Image 1 (cartoon, rainbow, N blue to C red):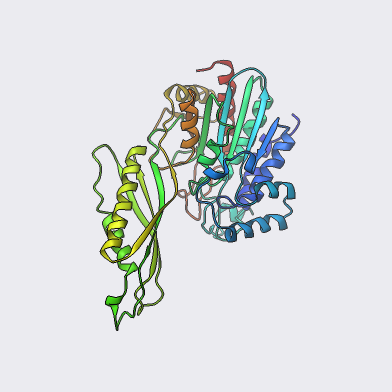
Image 2 (cartoon, rainbow, N blue to C red):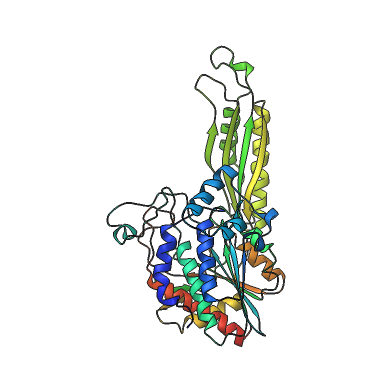
Length: 426
């Protein structure tokens, strides 16, 4: 074994956990992945702009949000050549292992962390064992640190096997903001993938349980709407203003009145509002941040259209203008039954796996669906696999953590599935 990853899975995961970076700002994370891939000796490494379609990135922060993270990475000693390739919000990596004739198997994992402060409680294991987030206000509260470690372990396991074909591993940025999936799907590397696996830990499945492939991820869109009116003195002449605050409030209230759809489940939520200057000034500009979801891509589009209509009507009612913007979105894509079945049969033979769940409804959203769609539209198969892990609290909470025994289980399931696909295509 030229470079030992699998015995270092825990250490790798903990190092990524210590250095969380949010979407499109995963500069140090990308560089660490590149370094590990170089040590593994993969056949091709595409970084940043080489791996992504720049114009298809979504939810990319402004330069004033990107630059501090780039400088933080530079100060931490990240290689300048990697920083040059990832600057401007072009994080992410594609690794290629070429083992001759055979199918092309893809694996997608995500890189980014969440804007959330990690617990500092003494009984929180990352605190007790010294790997709590070093970046205040950000943490790996969804297991992406584990996903990266699993992907590196899978590459090593495939390299040291009788796998025949090509393995492509997509280290995707900006999943939490649904910004990177489309850009990576349009980057070109997924076009010849015959089988695509995606992976997530936990999601209320315990260590030893494998969900072979989820179905019904919700299609989703993040939107903002900026209402612009005219300021006026709230006491002397409120009638002279165009009240952007009232327009936004009307839109928020009416958004929750959008009719549910007979074709399936829909969701809408307005989670943030910002604007105005003082209590005695008619607000001139107010922005809301919202999301819509649907059981199908069509139902999401229905909700998005209706929310935009509600915003335009509210603006007109209060003599304002409004500019709705779609910040990011993702379609629905289901795991293919044939690939699910293969994952399940492979997992039954993996040490540590105690229960196989053939499929379940996902119930949340994920922008890997862009890659899944691209593969399945091209005649290939895709499956989104859940690797169970005991987690003391829910995902996206300050005390989220994983059972690191699940790392080796995940590597074995993913690697053995890729190896089996090279021997027995489905």
